[in-house]
Length: 251
Image (cartoon, rainbow, N blue to C red; front, top):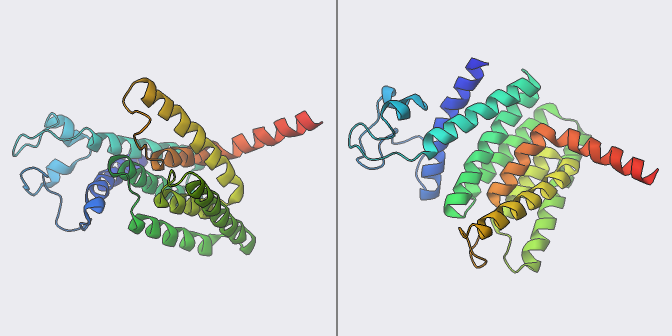
């Protein structure tokens, strides 16, 4: 488990690079990691997840500029999620695809939160990789289920975007279509429901705390991402509970 957590931390460090560079249209592999304030190339010792941040007290050890708390937070978040996924699924094919998806969702959620965009390059990479997963492992029936999820999710969010006159962005439509393709239509319906509940909750909190007002745009991508992660861990349980409740109510 320690190894899984360590891998999560290391990949979390790479996710920070993606979150910073992708919206700027920069390469995620070149140039090598450097301080964004003084442009000094960072050495291996400066890149140890979380530890380097704590050792340098949240500052660049070359120019002394403060480093955003986002960096250790994302590293720890990714490491923790990896650990929980390993605990839930063990070593199997599902573990690999869920590790991939959760890291992708962290990138999407934070980019959308900070920049109010969901880059097409990230979504296309998600679609391409998910398609490979499907072709390698799943039957034709399950692939059809995934295609239905893509179409249903994309169509519902497109209708919402039209009716709300732009209240739902194009990136959100593509993201929900991707998740519909990944999960299939049954889990997608739960995911969409959770995303609206989570979005409504946080929006009300932000309004009550006067962090946002009614005219402010609140990106929906982070709520979709949170709902997707909840669906990974508790989707089957929630769907089973709903079906049993519905059958008992009807009976």
